[in-house]
Length: 63
Image 1: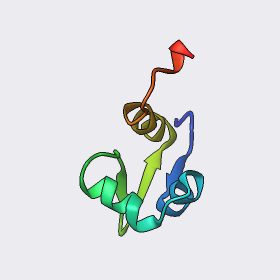
Image 2 (image 1 turned 90 degrees about the vertical axis):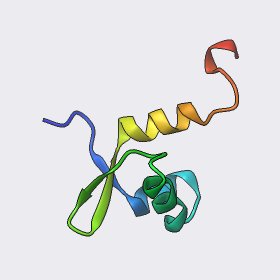
Image 3 (image 1 turned 180 degrees about the vertical axis):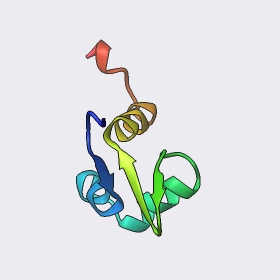
């Protein structure tokens, strides 16, 4: 069972305040891990969190 829901490309774009095309580019470049269901992509919340952590410009533990 999934502990966290899967997000659509639209939902990811809304959360990050970027275009859906940008999210799709990240997916196709394999920067953002996603799962394809038919013609649609879904992103696990944990994968979005990992993507954001990997692209952060500072260590959140250092304040």
